[in-house]
Every structure is written in structure tokens, then in C-alpha cells.
Length: 129
Image (spheres, rainbow, N blue to C red):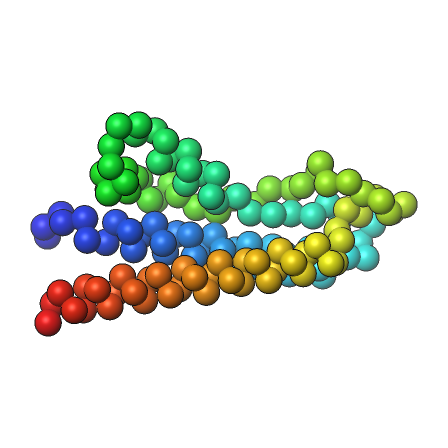
């Protein structure tokens, strides 16, 4: 197969959508554990990983940076947020209002990513016609 790089952006957007889906599940898990004593909220890190991967190649265009990414290593990572202030006596640091804001923000992100994927495939379809 010819290595044209036509799917480079699709791979990155797909990985970002996977991480966004994982974040949605993680936030839902936080909300489900709102009454669990000593539970610490969790979150997903993806954008920092992507930024770090793109910074590794300093003097290249964005297309060259995306083409050189190893997308198999690019994924969302769940981490426990121990730094969040816990105002509750039971040690739980989940605030339902904050989690709902994060959920809404993440849903908008996921919708944007799926629209970007659709747009990329529509561009490919128009080129193939």
C-alpha cells in the first residue's frame, strides 16, 4: 500500500475521540461514587500527551508532525486527582456540580471530534469521485 499520509489526521482525531469517550465514562464513574467515603475523583489526560508528542519535532510543519506521530502510543490515561480540595468530612473530593460541567464540556468536545471525523471522510469521498 502507498504510504500517502491521508489517514494521519483521521488517526489522531480517532484517538482523541477514544480519549473523550473514556473521559465521559470516568466522569460518570465519579458521579456514581459521589457518596463513597474516601473516593478520589478521576480524570483522563490526553491533550497534554498530544502536545508533548507534537513538541518533540520542533522545526516541522504541523502536517510533518502529525505524520511522524506514533499513534499507537497516543491514548487517554486515567489518573486519580488527589490534589482536588476535599471539603467533606468523609474524604471524598467529588463535587457533582463540577462533574456535570466537565461532562457537558466533554460532550461538546466529543461532538466536535465526531464532526471533524465526518468532515475528513467527506473530503476523502469527494477526492475519490
